[in-house]
View 1: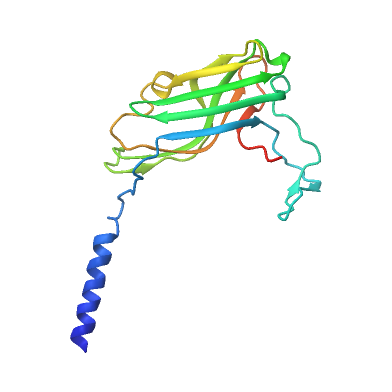
View 2: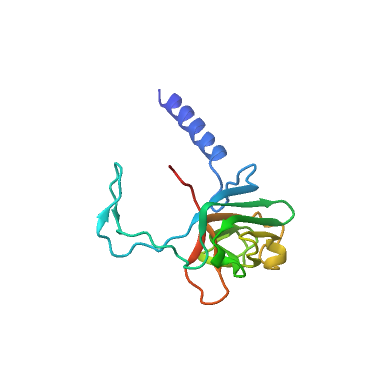
Length: 197
C-alpha cells in the first residue's frame, strides 16, 4: 500500500513539475497583435457624488456630466475609432469625425494608460513596469480640419527606442484617448469606450 502511495505521489509531483512554469518565466499568448476600440466623449471624473447611477449596481455618481474638453467634442453624428497592430513595429491609427466646429484648427494628440512586461531587463530577466497614466504618444497627433482628425503612425516613429525588438514586450492597455494640446490643455477630450443605448 505504501509503495502505491509513493508511486502515485511521485507521478503527481512529476506531472506538476512538467506542467507548472519555471518561477519567473512568463506565460505568453500565441497571438495578441491587434487592439481596437471605438471612441467616446471624454468626461470629467466624478469626485463629489450626489446621486446614484441607474441599474442593479446603483453606484454613486455626480449629477452633471461635464465634457473633459470645452472646445473639442463630438456632434450628434460624431464617431471615432482606435486601431493598433503589432508586427515589426506597433502601428497607431485614430479616426475622429463629426467634431464640433470649435475644434477645427486645434491639435489633438494620443495618450495611453499602459503597463508593459518584457524580457531583457536590467536585472537580466523579465520585468513589469509601473502603470503609466495618460502617457503622451509622441507625434501621434493631428490638426482638426473640416471637423475630422486622422492619425496614422507607429510607436517606432513617435517614440524611437521605446520598444526594442526581441524582448517579447506585452503592452497592457488600460485606456487610450486623444487630448487637445493647443491652447489651454484641459482633460482627455476623447477616450476608448462603448455607448450602450
